[in-house]
Amino acid sequence: MTEESFTLTSEAAKELSQLGAAKGGEARAAKLSPERRREIARAAVEARWAKAGKEPVPIATHGSPDRPLKIADIEIQAYVLSDGTRVLSQASFLEAMGRHRKANVKRKWTEEQVPPILHGKAINEFISKEILEKSRPIKFRTSHGVIASGYRADLLPDVCEIYLKARDAGKLPANQTHIAKQAEILIRGLANIGIIALVDEATGYQDDRAKDALAKILEKFITKELRPYVRTFPTDFYKEMFRLRKWHWPELPADQRKRPILVGNLTDNVIYDRLAPGVKQRLKELIGRDENGRLKKKMFQRLTEEVGDPKLREHLASVVALMKAADSWPQFIEMIDRALPKYKPMPLFDTVRELKP
Image (tube, rainbow, N blue to C red; front, side, top):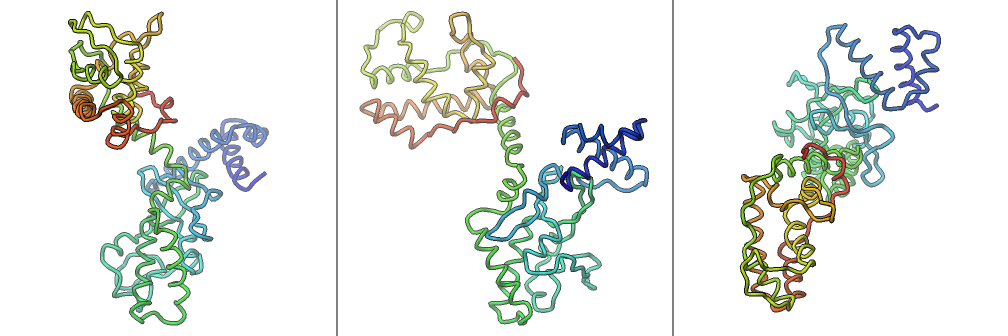
C-alpha cells in the first residue's frame, strides 16, 4: 500500500470507527474507492479544525505529489486551490531555486514572513513592493487533509528575474551564483509557456477550466426556452450558396423553394461550426429530431437575444460577404477557413449539463 493510500485509509478508518465500526474500520476503509476515502478524510479534518476553533484554510482541489510540475529537469509540487489560486509548495519552491527545503527566515523590517529565497542584502534593491506583497506564504489543505504552505505560482518567474538582475549588476555574492544559474534554467523553461498554464496541466485543472469556460459560453449563447420563429437567414446566403455550388436558383417565393439536402450540412459547416465552441452540438441536442431524423425546430430559435442571435447575424453578414467575393465553392472555403476558422471539437461537451430542454 502506498503512503498516500495508507494515509487516506487511516483517516477513513478513524471516521468509520466513530460510527461504531471500530473493529472493522480499517478493513472497510480499504474497500472504499479512493475518492470516497478522500471525502471522509477531508470531512474528518474539517471537523477537527472546527472543534479546535481554527480558521478554515483553502482546499487544494487539484494537484498531488505524484503529479509534479516539471521545468527542464526540475520538479515542483503544484496545486490549484478552491478559489482558483495556483500555488507551489514552499519546500519544492526553495529546492527549485537551489536552496534547502527547510530554510526559514524572516525579514526584520517587514513583520511578514517572506520566502527565504528573497532574504539577502544583495537582492534587496531589486525587490518591489508588489513582489513583496505577492510573496506572502499561503496556508492550504491538500486533498489528503494535510496542512501545507506554499507561494503563488507566478512568484517563481519574479524571483528568478530578481537574482538574474542582481547577477547582471555584479552584486550577487559568490555563494549565491548557483541560485542565479537555477533561475536561468527556470526562466528558459518558462520562456515558451506561462507558469499558470504549466500548473494547470500538471494538476489537471485545465480540464475543469475548459468545462467551466464551455458552460459560460453555452449559457450566453443558448436560451432555455424556444424563441418564436423569425426569419434570420437572408436570401443572399442561399442565393450565393447556389451560385458557388453551380445549382439552379428557382425564382419562387421562399416558402415554395426546395433546397438540396446538402444545404443543411453546408450551413453547419460555414455557420454553426464557426459560431462559438460547442454551440452546434448543444443546439442540436436541445432541438431534438423527429421520427424522420430531421431537426424539430430551427437551431437559431434556441439562441439568446442578447448574445447568440446578434452573433449569428454578424457572422452571417461576414459569410455572405466572403461568398460574394468568391468565384467558386473551393475558393470560398479557403477564404472562410482563413477568416473565420472552425472551432475545434469539444471532447468535454457531453459532461456539461447546465441547460435543459
